[in-house]
Length: 246
Image (spheres, helix red, strand yellow):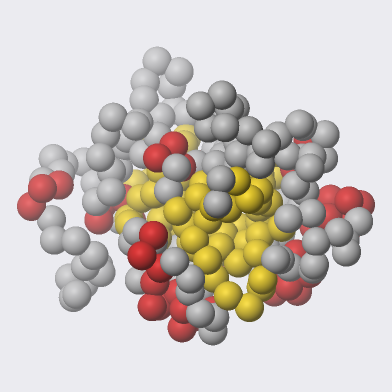
């Protein structure tokens, strides 16, 4: 599943890259590691207004629910059950693209040992756009990331769950932004297919603990290949690139 992404770029860099204004930019948090279980706000383009980027909160809440009585984990939605599950079936036509710079997946080595963490990012592009749906709730917009069966490469990495986020780009991303209720469920299901270009990914093992909510992994090493060493997290300057320049 996809509960962990990176947001390495500034909100201004996002604005320039996508040629769109950004609303509610004060809600954006630049981060090496963003954990969905913290219910963060993330940059999203939606088919309600595809001319701009806005900040939507990660975890879809149906508009008729209260947060106190809604306990479902709706941070991800499986493509195979999107149209039938009660949490999602009324919002399938509210499509969106979630902007990020990469995502993380666990790799099971031994059931008795902690999983390894892997980082996945484009080899040549600065951003990924993930397919999702959203619900307006309590004055804000909330979303879920759609997942699909994993590709061969991602199946080797996410070897237990064998899932990956829905990645949309080019013509497919543009079609995903069709106005609400202008696309059939059949066509939407066709677009919710596993990504076809495994050669476009750069993948490597990174530091342990990405999926451990008790560990602070919003540190530069999450975007670096793993090394066996003690990690002086508190001594690291924030948001330096691999060459050390700000």
